[in-house]
Length: 522
Image (tube, rainbow, N blue to C red; front, side, top):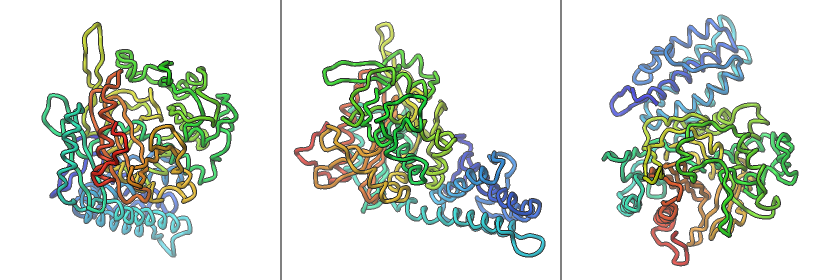
């Protein structure tokens, strides 16, 4: 994200934010023009937009510079514009609610002006499009009231102490966002970049690793709700080109019960390791190949060339391959890239302006903390900045980028029923035994027993020096999201401190600082 910004009072919008506002506002006019009288809509609507005041007026006045509209049909335009309207209101709500109201009001006036023909009433198509645009603005306002900024809660020294101690255990930096009955608490500790003193940005972008799986599973279940996928259908029905075992269902992919080999390598109980692609456990080989592009089909075919871990449905084993297959399934049934479907069904409706499904994109939007990788080369230990790399090596097993705020909005919306019908949400959160103490796995989420009679819905993830935590009570009312930056290595040296850190935070937030003595702490 370009750091060039405009500021009014305490409100600062990045170039990407401004582009979202312009795309949303002028896109709304494009939709009106496409369904009505083009000249009238463009003229009357544009006058209304350019007459806006304040920060919104300043942004919309520069209409010709960066409006991103690529659709050729009304449906294609709507797929871009309606989510952009939601995103625009959300990002303004976070900065200045008054400007969000200004934007909503301005677009309403512009749409009303664009809908007026020379004589008579607007046609049915124009009236319906106006209704959809207004509905998108109204829905964003309601969602913003539910998930926008909460007044700062009381000082919580125990949370800050936990962050400081987590950094002392070996992490470069950490940020934490907690929403509960005491309000919102946001804090950070450590450094954004090795050698500097600045703390990590509290809502910076980070590679969220396997939290990607929760987004992907949610998207599959949304397509189940749309009737495009059958949860208990054989996956081979949708992806015949891979000649999958016909017993493997879509549910098994999401639940990690397919038995399919993990393309990043399998680790067996007897200590045997069967390597896959050069992942972050490969040391210098991963560093040297970190900008290579891997096709999802390539990763799947590698996995299928290896022996299955067990017969379908007879065990549980975490495999990134399951979620690359889920991604390919999404793209097969929709005919669109997974990033577009994420935007249509999750990012847009929730206003997740800081979340990206990058596929092969190497850079992170600003601001962000830096990620590192430590490895041995010719007998010498080296540490390199790997913030930029091509995440196609992990694909939909863990390639996404997000922020603590967006993760909080997402997990709260998911668990409170805003993204899935009740019956599918129940399926998602029904835990299957994993062999991990106090931890079951549903469909893209872990269900963890807190040890004090409660449960949390969660997924965590790490990806080459970045990590993210995402926890929620089953009703979505209490959430914990966090990001970490550190020096990763082939030996996974920080694996135990990472487990201890997550347990420490869960105990503090969900158990009132009272860990069950029977609960493991690592």
